[in-house]
Image 1 (cartoon, one colour):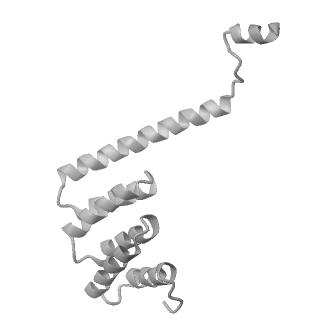
Image 2 (tube, helix red, strand yellow):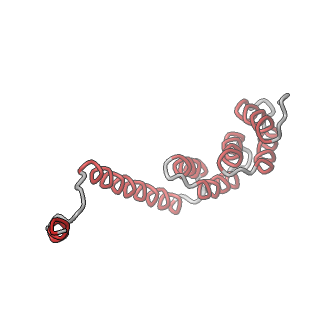
Length: 142
C-alpha cells in the first residue's frame, strides 16, 4: 500500500511515459494547425477572387480530401457550378462527391445528366454515370 502512495506523490505521477505517443500527438496538432492555416488561406483567396470557379474547385478538393469536410466541399462545388454552369468537368466531379461522399444519388444523377447534355461524349461523366447507375440504382447493365 505504501508503494502506491509513493508513486502517486512522485513528480512523474502513476503514468507510464510514452515518448512515441507524445510525438504522435505533437505531429497531429502540427498537421491540424497546417490544415487550418491552408483552409484560412483558401478562404482569403476566395474572398479576394469571388468570381474564380477554378479556385473554388481546388478548395473543394482540399476540403474533401484533406479536411474530410464533405459538406464544405459540396458548398464550394455548388459555387463553382454557379460561376461556370457550362463546365462538364466541374459538374462531373461535383456529382461524384454527391454520390460517394454525401450519399445523394438523385442529385448526382441530375448533375451528371446536365454534364452529358452539355457534352454528350464527356468521358468522366459517362464513367461516373455508369458507376452511379450500377451502385446506387442497382442497374447491372449500366
